Image 1 (cartoon, rainbow, N blue to C red):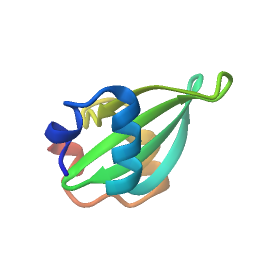
Image 2 (tube, helix red, strand yellow):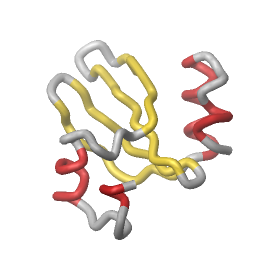
Image 3 (tube, rainbow, N blue to C red):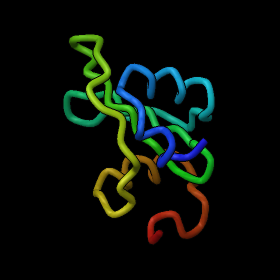
Image 4 (cartoon, helix red, strand yellow):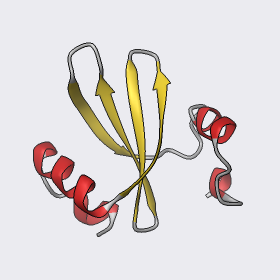
Length: 85
C-alpha cells in the first residue's frame, strides 16, 4: 500500500489501514502532539495525536523539508538522502 492509496480513504479507515500495513519507526513530541512516524511502502507518514484529548487529528505524508525532520534525525539514523528527497 502507498500514500496515494491510503489518502483516498476517510480518516478512520486510514488509521486502520496504516496500523495494518505500515511499520512504526518512532514517536516524537511536537508542541501539543505526539507524532508517530510510520513507513508505508516507500513513504513516511506522520500520525498527529492530540494526547490531551486522546484523538488522532490528522495523518499526513512526511514533509521532508519541514523543521520537524530535525526531531527525527536527532533520535534515529534516517536513510541517507531522506532529508533531500
